[in-house]
Image: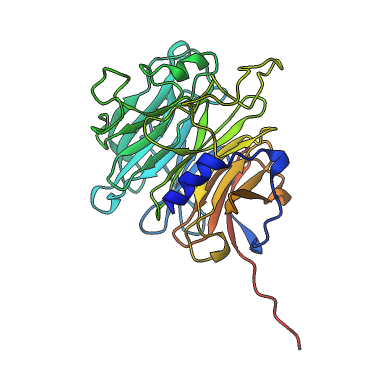
Length: 375
């Protein structure tokens, strides 16, 4: 599977005008509201007992029952820097949670003139966090309250992947291998650089860096079957990207891009260049690609192996699937007319969505009930 995906990356770059947006094997579904009245929910994660953890950008970590009802607001969460795009971001349940009760959080940390993305580890009790440790603060600090990245995933061996944004005003630093803006970082669960990182000895780049040349990556997923790492990132005006992540690769920002600056000027006259990795899919105009999931469940066998990206501006979810020598797409859930911040596959095989608003919701997508004949 991974070999096939790599071939697609080398041969298929798809723009919006080339897409087949009507998937032939799409699945009928029903959407249930599990929780509502949430203040800008950002991330959803499951505990082994079926309960859920949910972050709200303002700094709250909620414990939800399996039916979506709020059981507790967890105390002890480090206070984030909440301004513009800043706040509390991802929550991740450690692969060994049953034995260590450990979770991880990412957030924006101040002060305003020297803020950064931070990664914490903590022990989760019923209603509070204890043993809170700052594992990593992204360097250098910046004075812009935007482009934090902040997505977090754990690899099979226990290492952590953390996305970082370029800080908007510092986009050239995404190409600088000696700082951590505009990167994916790979860390051990204790916060050290992974020993097999591309620049582990520090002579050719920062030891934490796994990939570089990113703008503001807010979608990150690891395929539980193939091990492939996928990432979505926001472009400027156009040029949102879906990327297949390979250690040491340079994904081009801002040296190459399919998007324009907000002034209408070119960020770069180049859309590709030798040695820079092309996106698997690019979206122009922008859809504002957000949370990312890979579906490997049994509830929707038609969707198995497909990617699902939230789209904040388009107010949809994009289903992305192999089609011939390229990729097809289907636009889903536009009937909600809501910004989709996160997309997750639950342990029950259903798809879960977080809507991004001051009255945000947790939604569950399940197969439509079968039609019962009256004959």
